[in-house]
Each structure stands twice: as C-alpha cells, then as structure tokens.
Image (tube, rainbow, N blue to C red; front, side, top):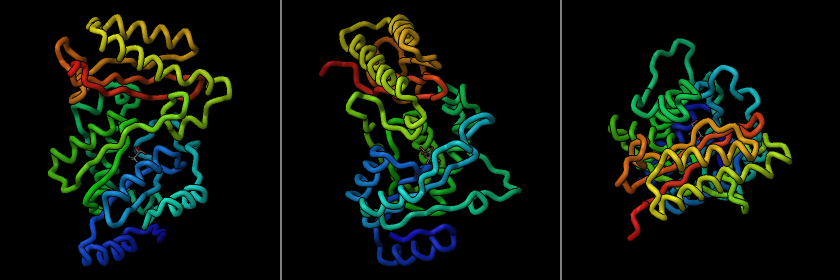
Length: 283
Ligand code: PAF
C-alpha cells in the first residue's frame, strides 16, 4: 500500500492509474478504523480496480467544545488494517495541505444542514460537505463509499453530488453492528464499561419504534415520546428521536412508506447516533 500525504504526490499516482483506465474507488475516513470502515473498504475493493482510503480528522466539521483534539488517532494500527484488507493507496494529508489560511468557500446543503444533527452541531454538515467536495476534486474517483450509519451525512453528500453535477457515483453501505446491536463507531471507545452495557438500548429503542410502525401504529409522536422515555430510563440524554421521510428527513406523514427513524442521544459524555431505514408498507 502506498501512503501519500501531498495532493501533488497523490495526483502523480492517479494520473498513471487513469492512463490505464482503471476504475478508482474512494473511501474517506477520519481514522480509528473499525469493522464498519473495513466493510466500506471491502465493498470498494469488489467494485473498483484501485481503492484509495483517506484518513483526515477534519477540523471544520467539529464545533467549539467538541472532541476534535480528543478524537482518537490510531494511524499505525489503521495502516495495518488497510494493508491487510488490500487498500492500494492511503491519503493522509496534514491540515495545512487541505486548508489554506485564507480560504473563503463553504459548501452548504441548506435543506439538510440545519436539522437533526445539524441543529445540535451547527456548521457540522457544512464542514463535511466542504471537505468531501475537496476530496472529490483532489481524488476525482469514479465511485465513493459512505456508511448508512451517518444517514443524514449520506443524504447531504448525495444531494451535493446531484446539485453540483459532481461525476462521482455514491454507494451507501449498510450499518455494521456489534453482536448486541450497537452500531460500530469510533466514539464507542469513549464509553465506560457501564455505559457500554447500556449503549445497545439505542438500537433496541429504534427497533421497537420500527416494529410499532410495522404493526400499523401511525401515531408517530407517541412512538417518538415513548422511545425518548425508554432512553431516559436507561441513562441516556436523548437529543432527538424522530420518524422521518427517508428521502428528505422531514417529519414523516401518515401514508408515507419510505421511512427512517433517526436517533441521537448522550450516554455520559459520549454522543451516539443511530438509525433504521425501512419501507413500512408490507409487500
Ligand atoms: O464520516 C466521516 O468519517 C467523515 O464525516 C468524513 C465523511 C470522512 C468527512 O470528514
């Protein structure tokens, strides 16, 4: 696996690959890789001739007081994992390589940036959209891979690509869960032993809410409130638990069938997010 930290170095390798008409797959990450990331890499390997992963803890998607400095950086370990799975190239730029001091451009996917996670984390999705846009311009992949765990992020990126005619295919990859249902996340490592035992309740609350809807309950507000109560009773501080239209993340309306239930809740100091996307209509 080649490891490159400059845009110029990356472009030299990419131009050789393009001259050979190879299909290039890209998986952006912030490192601290777990099996969820590795699933993205292996799906990418099955789809593309060459796979590029990036590790970049992007400062612009962290708000004041968030965990940018504390975000786990495990580069040696990450490199071993990427090598073992057969990633061809790892791009690991420094912040100064990615961001000029006098930069002026921000990408904002307005309709999606300021709801749900965007409400609690102002500017977060602008940071994500801007850095992903920059990566797409730097790497110019044919296809890029994102996990469904960050459902709102996935829609932000799909919308940006569509609105700006970016010639990259976006492939989404299902959530990878621990045996007890907890969605894999780099932030799970912040949980204490006791919190880790409670954490799967987030997925259980989502699954119960989905079951209610599948059984025909359309009183979404009651379902949401019950779920928040359940979470509070199990030590969580819910941020939101909301049944949405799966395409635009607006509150679900009775009769809509493409639904996603989005949840974010704090357990101690750790903010966990998870979701379930499903079609409610029985086929
Ligand atoms: O999902 C992430 O890890 C990040 O938000 C991403 C897409 C790599 C952008 O920094």
